[in-house]
Image: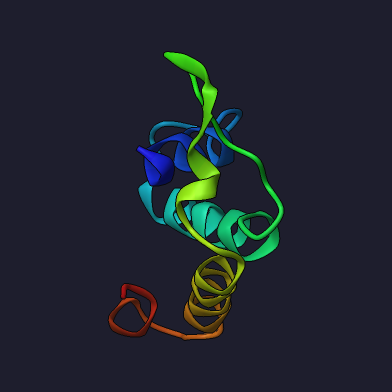
Length: 79
């Protein structure tokens, strides 16, 4: 659910018909936002879904997204 909600935020104003760029946009969003972004469960506003991962886990995701964005082909980008 956490990844789904972050993906929805990352792609909110993006075209639905641009899969390749959307993947890159999600990776950029993860790189730039996952560590500090608070994500609330829309069905239970008392549930901070972003608290399910600790800071080190979020930093690892951000670093993996950054690493993926530095690759030149899809086999290196998708992890």
